[in-house]
Amino acid sequence: MIKAVQFGEGNFLRTFVDLYFDTLNHEGGEYSVSIVKPITFGSLEKFKKQNNKYHVVLRGVKDGEAVREVYKVDVLDKVISPFEQYDEYLALARDKELKIIVSNTTEAGIAYNANDKFDGFENITFPAKLTKFLYERYNCGLDGVYMMPVELIDNNADELYKCVDKYIGLWNLPEDFKKWNDEKNFYCNTLVDRIVSGYPKTAEDVAETEKLIGEKDALMSIGEPFGLWAVEKKGEIDKYIKEGVHNIEVVLTDNIGYYKKRKVRVLNGSHTNIVPAGLWHDAVTVYDCMTDKKLSAFLERTLEKEIVPFVSSDISATKAFADSIKGRFLNPYLNHLLISISLNSISKWRARNLPSFKDYYEKYGKIPENLTVGFSYLMAIYSRIKEKDGKYYAALPTREVEIKDDKPYLEYFAGGGSVEDFMKDEKVWGENLDAYEGFVRAVKENIEKLGKGEELI
Image (cartoon, rainbow, N blue to C red; front, side, top):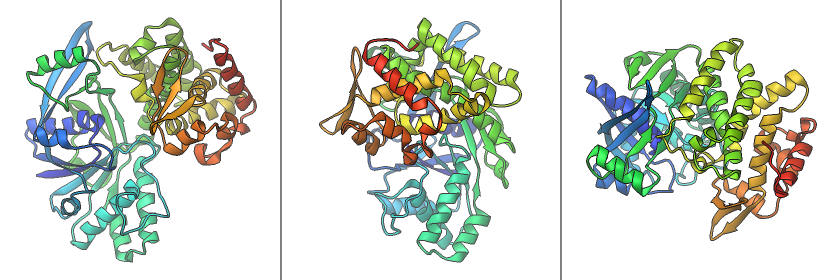
């Protein structure tokens, strides 16, 4: 048996990673996954009621025909909350058959906090929780594991290693443990690619999907047929992660950087840039954006002029990938909500769009028009944030939407903080965005135009 521990119970991991391992089982493998809830928010009651089983429905268009593929996933062994089941959490670390650790804690999840205490748990970061998990395994004299984070940051596993290493030093853990972590654990950078919309969004879609799968399922998740998992090849990972197409295509590679850069900038970057514009102009889903002439043209211009030319020297290959992305965005069956993609928009813009913005600026000596416009829509929305009963909302021209992001950002704008000062905050962006000549001024002018009812696209 090859066992994996997964930090995160969300739709993406269940529709991508868990379906992959489940597929390997159907092909004769022996895999099981134990899910660990990484934060206190949310309940695992649905998993308990369904005995950790659920369905994935992949919907798309192939050769002009609608494709709907149904999978019943039963690869999950345990689904635990370490906040109430700490002993079970540590028991996972003591399992000799554990070989793989996967995580998806959002772009902001892989972080180090010097105030985290070794005897704490609930309020410490994911890497801190992982350090305690690994320390338990080390103390049992067990071998290391393969760390495969899927968070969409550059060199995600390298960054995770750096955090764990810092906690080892912060908490004065034994030098032998540091050596064990360095030599026995393999931190493999990864890139994942599948659009997942999750649970059906309307009562009609819920009823239709339940009819398709043949039963009620509070955990069912919808995704697209396309799937790619590029994993950095280290150690003997090919013993545990199988290459080829196993529902998703898996590639073990020494050049993870190319796959990462291409996907984050082209797919995620174009997503992040179009979402605030789409929200402002009454779109509900990505499909709505792609079928709106102005929004789709805006996405086309952004990709062609400001993203594709800066991914690699092989522009034709990147353009081909971008063309495939546009086809995937036009999948009418995904119902991929813009408001869902807008989660943690600030960290997403920094990770997905700022690198393309910088590359364009360095080449041409001026700010990129379309990325600036996308950012302007984002700041226009955030500048309208108000707090109501502990939640945060932004009043758009024709509707009000709930905004979910890091609380300090929400509190800043709800408290009347200025866009200009926010753009200058190096803690937010890693640099002062006012260093890009004309950027702050352009954003302020664009926000004023939007406030007057003018359009930017």
